[in-house]
Length: 320
Image 1 (spheres, rainbow, N blue to C red):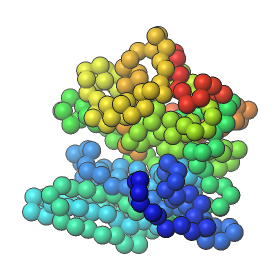
Image 2: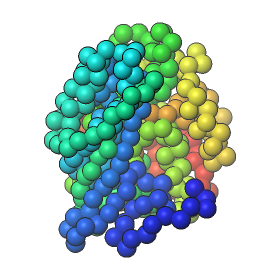
Image 3: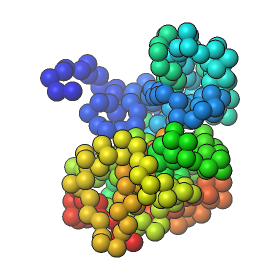
Image 4: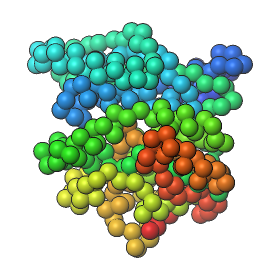
């Protein structure tokens, strides 16, 4: 936001100057607050599941920063004249159930009447000031671990078009409603320096934020990347969300895909995710152990999908 002058404070550890998932403010030698906010329009028809997904998505940024979410506030925009209040009640119940699962306390919120339904949370978490995970700490040689399969944007586009099979709808709904809590808890026991969650910018967009300006590049193996069932088929039908095209336009200059890579896979790597998994750079000697620990704790899709490399700088090479 060029030309705007923002307030400064020496206790602000992570702020607007970086492209991180949340802000971090130190309040003592042992405690830093992590703050984030996220809300959006419905992406599934069931209001209860929409509430669960929106809450899981908002909580994810705290997990990605290495923190533990503690409190939340509801954000609601609701079309009172077009929808029955029972819809709102189901959404809020879904959010509450997800907060209870995360052991987060709802402390308030704000609602307005709007022509378009929206729901989400403002979340506050805590972490030790010296254990914050950011996107800024990747090093050449780090292995890249992804904890959830890709394809939610493509599948949700198919759902909106009435083309998704019931089994696929159920799979993507439950995936998006799954907290990144367990993955974050496992990561806390390993020498991980950085992390991000994969959301609106897609895998390639969020990986780009990790390497730009850091003097490193990245290599991805598409065969190692977990995908939601039917994602490739739906992408082949042209069911790509607008966000995928925007992501491609913004970051395509960083991408070098081998001729053997199916162009549809590149599309899916740009696919904007909702409540996606964590992308975790970890030193090579710990990567296999971290994946094994994640899978032992039920994070069944955890996979090593690539690595950070010395060069070429600010390039992401995609290979089979």
